[in-house]
Length: 136
Image 1 (cartoon, one colour):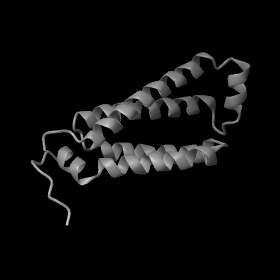
Image 2 (cartoon, one colour):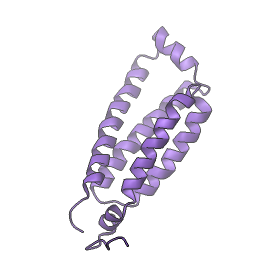
Image 3 (spheres, helix red, strand yellow):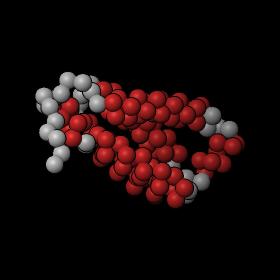
Image 4 (cartoon, helix red, strand yellow):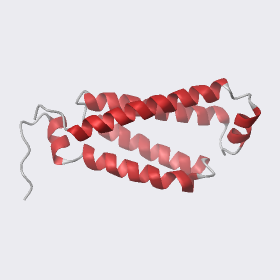
């Protein structure tokens, strides 16, 4: 299968765009961390601020790199993305006092992404196979 599935393209672009915006947000927090309002928000996180900023930055970078890798047909990156998502999910549960508000949406988004990245068409494309066998 030579043509990239549309779902892979859409997911990749979403990951690159939101990862880039998130990375800009992390950089803004780094720049504004002396602001009292930012300090109040960061004080609610149960981990040291540098660790939280590093985890956030790495998470956004993984999203960007994953999106680019998916566009470049790097199927192994699906597993790296899955592993990082699990690490981020556990970290978010431990560090974010409002995790119950953000985690359901995160789980839904992750489920949708995994469904399409491991669909028969996507698996065939990432595997470089010529065609996809029809479902029975």
